[in-house]
Image (cartoon, rainbow, N blue to C red):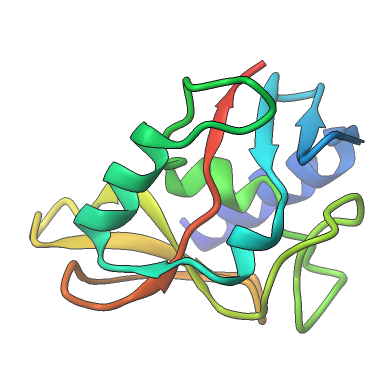
Length: 138
């Protein structure tokens, strides 16, 4: 499983084409638009608050934002970088944990997150405060 995840990450990294547009980063390879403003470094929320924040978020005149899946978050990790392990093209981002919308299959009171210090992922209880980066379809 770890080897498969590594292969997916390498292919994802090589396919990424990121462009800064306004307060967002457009990933043309995955047809996603990422939030990239100061809130990415300031909003530390519980899981339920993070989901609500993205659902109500408006940026660059768009209101169709959502909390990304763990696989979408992994697509902006750069494993050749450390502290933060974030692809070039983003102007905002901390070496901290960022919530995903993906629930942990064995315990739905937990959700997956990505640690942008190293690029690793893990799961945690919803009662912890992690950072938030919203995404929408291009």
